[in-house]
Image (cartoon, rainbow, N blue to C red; front, side, top):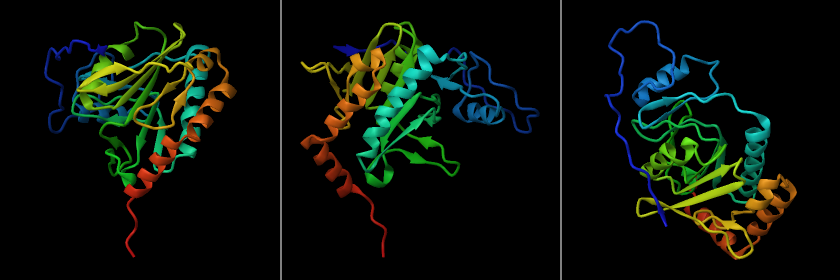
Amino acid sequence: MPVSTPRTEPAAAPFEPADGAGAIPPLENGDRLSAAEFLRRYKSMPGLKKAELIDGVVHVPSPVCHQYHGKQHYHLLTALGCYEAGTPGVEGGDNSTVCLDLGNVPQPDCLFFIRPDHGGRVTFDAEGYLHGAPDLIAEIAASSVSYDLFGKLQSYANSGVREYLVWRVLDGALDWFVLRDGEYQAIRPWDDGILRSTVFPGLWIDPAALARGDLAAVLAVVARGLQTPEHAAFVAQLDAARTRPTA
């Protein structure tokens, strides 16, 4: 069933600094800024580890704990990294700032994309920032009340993120959505309980193993997905799209 969230428009226009502005103000929760001003302030705060701009509003998350975020984040990254190791032409990232559009500059827990030199759609600017929608974004959330399942979900759908995964740690649940006709629809586990990506063939995730912290079982399922004919065909497709250097 399609998942949709009403889109709320900012109450005021995003702030842009006047020419010749003095000291750069710090980022504060609730600030309404343009993407350019958000990045200007973020870059001036090297001690700040994470900040995001969602629909023109600044979010500065609280520190996260190991037991309900750090460990889960690490396990999911490990699974994605194993898939990347067996799939030339895809690439992942951890807490990379993404310039989606003028009002959205998130910093997802995990992201995954087809590389531009293998037919992917993201680009990189001169400073190394990623522009455009990654093919998959994953967030570690405490529960279903997290803004990862509200403002972020709608923002990612509007920006064209093809798959969105939210691990609700306290609920022991993994929500995996695929974008169809501009709306996210839930990906359902197969009869064996395994979730399978529709964008990255062979990317298989065992949500039960993730929830109980059984990393060995998680990686065993990832390895099975890498051995499928669908994955082999995807690797061949990526290789065919690869940009070869000219002689």
